[in-house]
Image (cartoon, rainbow, N blue to C red; front, top):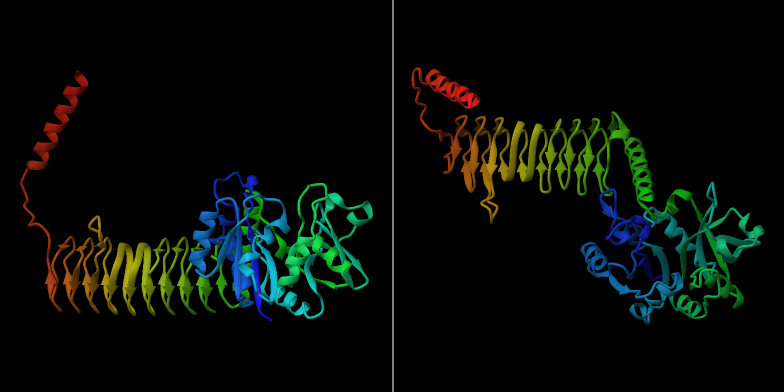
Length: 449
């Protein structure tokens, strides 16, 4: 069945105490709405419509970076969830498939859960996602009649008997698209909040003799984010799940509670991750790699047998081949490091290619930026870069070439050559003692004044 996603993202989120739209606050290195879009993408939707409101331009820019084909519509007034869904009508005009309503501030709905809802649509005109929380609190209640859903009652409108029901409403709803908008047209706002509730469509469908059903998910999937405290809880929930999955998949985490993953981190089996490692977005670590303590990786690929850290930083575009060594206080950015190369300590390698089995000495810097443009450094296979070498790009160090320690290299070095780019040392006998005596005398004079 063709499917459309309608993702509600219009709320200002005043409890967040932020100028940013609530759905653009991040969990695991990605905006909340990214997680909702990723879950829905598993259904291969024909259309995705984002209903924005506060900060609509920022929301539009963010979601188009993820999927430029997404349609963004604006809810000018926040008059309730049914009113929000109604804003998607024009974008889905003529669409004959199903629509699933998701929420941009509810990041953990699993693709498997949405697939179960799509399957349940074969049996029911309207399908609602429910859950049974430990504390039902102020959630809307799902009132069942036999094995079918009879209606949804908001907590503030519920009777004491209805408030005692443990099955609660997540807000996620699936229905035929045309039927969804027909039912929304009949929704009123005669309730305690004076809003147009999407949940009312269940009762309206039942009044037309249509069936409604419930798919039940774990409470953790329905965690919504309305405050900074909620955001912290969501981050903790994501990290807990990601760590458990990594361990289950054969990754060694020496201190799991200190390792932080991004939403798209991929780590192969038999990789070893030491304590206090942070993975930003876009990281892949192959099987058998070793990430040592206090390292930070983002937008990087680490191949089998490579060792990173401790205290290393891999920035976007870092590509480490097999058996590479990147040691303490080394930063690599937008650079390919070939098999067996070593950058063991205190170096910056950016916008560069490092050949196989090259050795980069401590304190080496690729001077890649002239204030306007970035320039490339090429270091050949088996080259030996002496400690404290400044490689002023664009420059090429040939295969098997060497640079002397303390050199500033501004020209290409041929294969097998030794480059010395430092000033001639000139010793002045006795001058250090004379200079120190002069300085001490001046210091004493100033104190006397």
